[in-house]
Image (cartoon, rainbow, N blue to C red; front, side, top):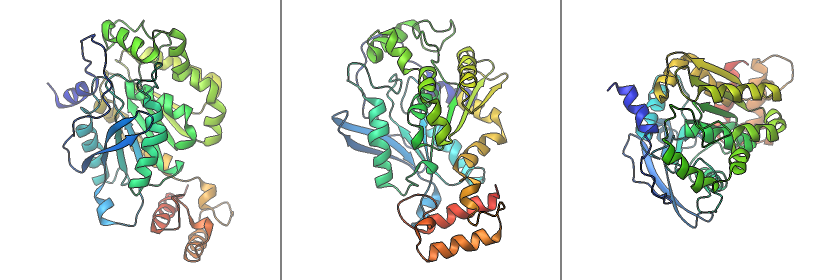
Length: 357
């Protein structure tokens, strides 16, 4: 089996048993370069919750620097199978200079949790990630603890979750990236004939997450949430992308979602990649150089922030003005919004200044 296809299958292989699901708040640790297994005590779940986190080599080499964070939401079937290949994918991109050094967080969304708070209260996954995991990571790692330092991305069920959480909580992120998102259809039990999750498993998810209530499915869907939160998406200036393979069964609902966003006037990019099925790394590879541009563009502050003297151009005078403010510890020098004036503000400003808007 080709390596890429093997990696992709690890992310989406469903369990075929229709036995009742159990909350799996802690996973087994994954061994991969620079990946740590961590836990924290969750008040919402009333138990210990695990996650994995990748830190780049620069995290150790530059002990005062703060780093942006990419929250990667896994697909269905396994909360851990994609961690090693995806951390390797991003780590290699950083080593090649395609991606700035960043922290990658792999939340535990459970095999079939849909990144929702279950209707019966048993698995408050959205609450755990948004209200507990993100603050925990910011408190325990040198993150850029501000919206300009966070990107949310996911594949398949994780793409669906990215749509849900990113749209509902757009004030927390500078970029949201939905890759081969599914299930995007409003009628959850009636999936496409070639859907990756079989009917028995889909029925179980319908019961466990939404208590067999179609109205709850509709309320949770990114399409509905986009209608409710379109003004916030616009005001928060979030970079929003959707990508899907041309041979993927989730393509039609993604097209419908794209068209819905157009009617709402929600700024986003939407691209279909011919010949690509429901496979993570092949889809990212097909996007090409623009894949890396997405992260850079999301993390780069606006031109207004860099043009300190408001001349309309990014010049050396702006650089001198920022450095003067930084040495004087003026509040405006907290460029990365990460709680205080530190060397990380210089790194963030220089990255934006050299980009030149």
